[in-house]
Image (cartoon, rainbow, N blue to C red):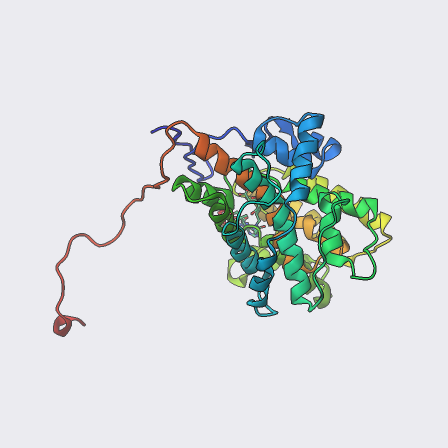
Length: 394
Ligand code: SDX
């Protein structure tokens, strides 16, 4: 069938789609967005430029980047009527539930009032999603704390505006430290796409039915929410806090994580594809040291994380199963240093992953002769049998 290649990477992953967006070599720990190594993008690019690369396939020229940034700015406000939706959620509602609902709600409102004839519907929706996912996240945080919502500012760039909407007050703007903005922007960049992970495959599945971009992205948010996927960054922090509060130096927890009956896993370790170091984890770990030193923060959880990594990498259980730190192992340390509450960690992942979801939606919709996804199954249920009347059932 068009676009279908049966793959089996030897680790039980049998894929079934072609894509030109992200390349991963799990054995060698390689990750490239549109052919460019993640290490170079982390060093030299930023989230908005990388989002453009992932969605449109090439690094933008100066003019293309300016137009893209301007479109994000013009579309950063939610339709004012959407504020009423926030009123309907209870204060303890998980922000991922709010995010998936509000993304679908965005799709119900008219395109931006600022559109002009040069901008296609798709480009407008791209700008709305990438820009407003930030606004929704910040508004839901402020509402959950009973704080007045803070509107975005035209003068601020992407990540700075998010921090402003999260932490400013009506009477005093949040102090935007360069290192803090850079650290958050890097987190978003490193999460921007990752081949056919659970949530991206979900977006492709929904997109293949010709559902709209907002519905596809909302489905991606729901898939990302799970603790085995995007929810892992929140689970890692909770694990580190549990270890810290117990006074364990990590060695007891490592033993528990190896014991199938303990119900514990070393969260942030292991990966469906990486059977070597996740290159994102290495970059984030380095950024942890830089940021905490700059902010003069001594976080005991970082020390515990490093001890866990050292212990696991010297333990045959983890080595034999090729379990290494993944993107989630250290990311929570940075988010915690930025003041992001733990319950918002997976929302950060969703903001970062939005360009990848959009690019995969676009790829499906532009693929010549692409058809609705319809995974096949191996039937293992009962063979044919007759209906049993109620009185004969046991
Ligand atoms: C993300 O796909 C993507 O690209 C995802 C992602 C992205 O950017 O989109 O990279 C983001 O989701 C990263 C993963 C975040 N999740 C976690 O950190 C949760 C903890 N990790 C595990 O649950 C697990 O490693 C998975 C889910 C990530 C991967 O699962 P696999 O490859 O299916 O591994 P498995 O469950 O088949 O385990 C193989 C063996 C088992 O032991 P045995 O049965 O062989 O004795 O390894 C063990 C598992 O029990 N194992 C672990 C472990 N992960 C696997 N044991 C302890 N701790 C762990 N974390």
